[in-house]
Length: 170
Image 1 (cartoon, rainbow, N blue to C red):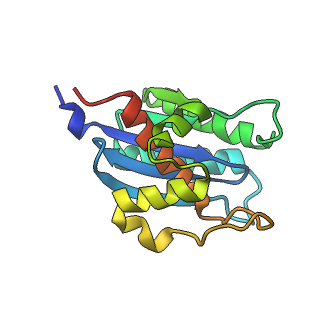
Image 2 (cartoon, rainbow, N blue to C red):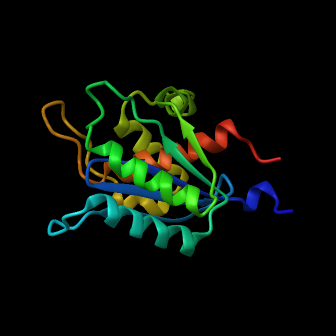
């Protein structure tokens, strides 16, 4: 039996035409991370996502997938995001990889002790924990600015870290 500190967890954050991932091996080791965006010339975002996700799962062999649960029916979820998420869930089911959903409140609670109130605060904390992310840290966002494109990466990694706080190693 594999020890919990060696368990591979693939954390995802899914958006309209891209998703970000962070691969953890145990709660303190971030093995890989990235953003996969659907190419502009692609006519089938869902099929492209399924192929990309299949490749990631075969390359990384995670024991569990962690996904922030989208808030359906709210202004924060784009309805076009749902088919992408459904495609990912079909792939994980076909490859028999369990999926664990986290509520947004679970992720916020994981960073409450750090007094992180904004995504920028969470990203800064993640850079302190995983210094290898420093080059990806976007500048602090002003209220009138849109969210930086690479913030999705920190959203995925924050979900992974929140998972480990909710499910401590044994």
